[in-house]
Image (tube, rainbow, N blue to C red; front, side, top):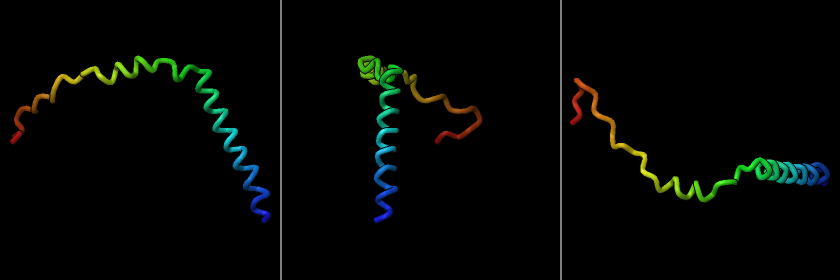
Length: 59
């Protein structure tokens, strides 16, 4: 029973810490550009595989 005396406030403290971290990221505009993220995933920046090194057997 004495464990609850320590665990209940600790869990509330951790919950408040998580809420404060979320509020800090929200106020720092971490979630500012969801449309840009959605468009960037569709871009193909890949130029293809790199050329094989000379003198090395590829096959």
